[in-house]
Image (cartoon, rainbow, N blue to C red; front, side):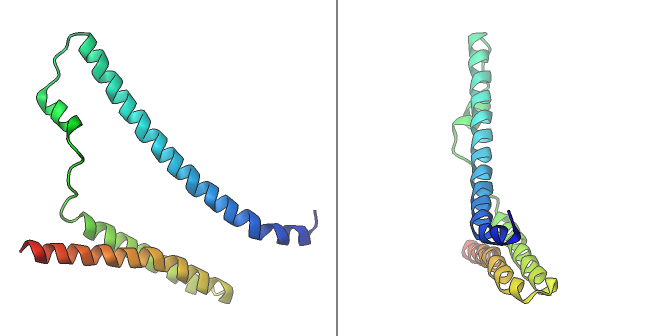
Length: 130
């Protein structure tokens, strides 16, 4: 393989690897959530088989839907995502390559704008609750 062949492969390999990493991350998160739920259910089953009584608080915790997000959770996530977006954009500027500025600013704008939206939601929610 010469350098010309490698240059032709980069536009194919980079997006493929990126999608595989994203897909693998989602698969791992899903797998570990499933495994945790299975272990909890197995523990409950064993406790019931041995005749142990389960506390009602425990059963209510398991059967209830996920608790509502904490009141400042949107603010925290918004600030973090805004900072991540600014960091990626600043990295693009500081790299010094003209070809890197545009793509990194574009990539950084996604978490930045999501962070701004979450912060705006927090502001609207706090004003609405007053």
